[in-house]
Structures are given as C-alpha cells and as structure tokens.
Length: 66
Length: 66
DNA sequence: GCCATATGTAAAGGTCGCTTTACAAAACGA
DNA sequence: TCGTTTTGTAAAGCGACCTTTACATATGGC
Image (cartoon, rainbow over all chains, first blue to last red):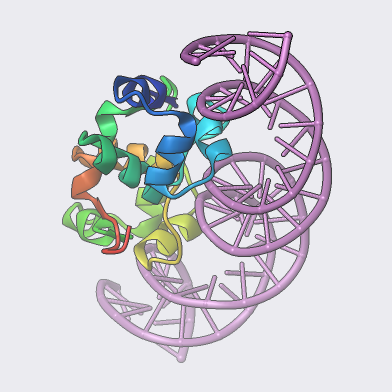
C-alpha cells in the first residue's frame, strides 16, 4: 500500500510531530506510515483523508496484487 | 465505524461464504465485519470497495468522534 | 423428519497497528 | 560552533485483525 502522506504534509510545511498532533497519534506512527512500515487502521485513514480534504483513494493506493 | 457490507452483499443474493470467497478472507471475517466486531484493515477495505464498485467512503462511515 | 445451507459464536494463535521511552544522527539558524 | 528542531530507529507491551477448527442454531426443501 502506497501513500502520499509525506507529500501532503510537506505541502503544508508541517513537521511529522505537527501532523501527529493533528491526527492525535504518536510521531513514530506518522514516521512509520510515511516510510511504509505499515498501513494505518481504517479509522486513522479516514482521519488523514479528512484532514487533507481528499478521498482515501487519492491518498492511499493498494498494491497491484490486492 | 459503521458499514453497509451486509446490505451490499444481500443486494447480490450472496451468502457470507460467497462474499468471503470473492474477498479471499474467511467466512468468520465477513461475519465479524457485518456484525461490527472490528473494522477491516485498509487493504481489505479497498478490496471490498473495488468488489462493490463504490468508494470506501460510501461503504464505511467513521464514528462521530473520529 | 431429514439433509443441506446459512448464520452466529468461541478458543487459540500469529501478525499488524499503535503506544511510550529512549537514543542517534541530520539539518538548520544564530 | 552551539543549541534547537527534525527525522529515523529500537524495544517492549497491548489490543486489533485475521486465521483455523469446531460447535450450535435456524431455515428451507424434499
């Protein structure tokens, strides 16, 4: 699962800590998501989409094989 | 997190086992999702949305407080 | 009544998502 | 150069997600 979190965060000149605060998760979680270590839960994906004002499908892209 | 999985499944006259086969998950997983015991992972949410031809936001609705 | 199908649930087990604490390294401004 | 901010990473712990096996109940057709 690919995502555009880092790109959307940098557009706003936010640090990972800033984004984490807006999402109410830890900074390590934001870092892990940006680096692709794991996918967010569905509720967190909704929070991210709402924060950036985009549909989930425009932020996250599933791998070819799913 | 609310979802319309049961409604969309019944529109197609599918059993939970039928849907599970299409999604390549266990029947118990489909049952748990329909009964709201837990939310799907983000990749599984994408599979469900693609199968039903709808955006994720039209199948899953986050709780008020998220 | 019988048999097959569909649904609900439980228990045990593995991996994932997220936390807190902590440390290291990179980047930046004054 | 020094102090601050930012990013990356690790480890331990906990609950969520999903599996397999198994059993119970309900429904419907014959």
